Image (cartoon, one colour):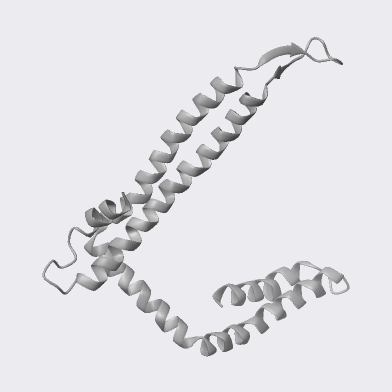
Amino acid sequence: MFIFLTIGAYGYSYASLQFEREDPTKKYVELVSILCWCMIPVMLLMMCCCFKSLILGVAVFKTTGAYVKAHPKAMFLPTVSTLLSVVWFALWLLSAVFIFSIGKPEPRKDFPMVTEMQYNNSDRGLLAYLMLALCWVCEILGGSVQFIIGASTCIWYFECNGDTKGKQNHSNSIWTAT
């Protein structure tokens, strides 16, 4: 809402003053400013209609804050996953360069000074398999991190008032993921 208020005020008070009265751009700037101001009551009405959902969202954010406060190492899991994905991509790139070099270089028909690589069917299949492996391993890494965070959150939520106080839920989640 503040953005719409700011855009409307800027357009009506400052931007429209830079154009002459007969200029159609001045009318468009004023029209956009008025439309921005009309969006404010619409957004207020939407907030009133979705009040229970907003309260639920605030409760989820509070719970998330409590979880992150109790387990700050959960913030490192996406970083570790990203680093593993980068290492995997580097290894994949090295193997892709090797596979691309397997083909037989032959001159082109129209441009004999430019060569192109000729591959047989098994080389093409190997390239397709390599693409599948790239996507599959990256998705497994991302999905594993999501599972570990989700499982540890559930364990923490249901055991935070118990005997264990929700401790060691990451190791339980990692063990379950493997």
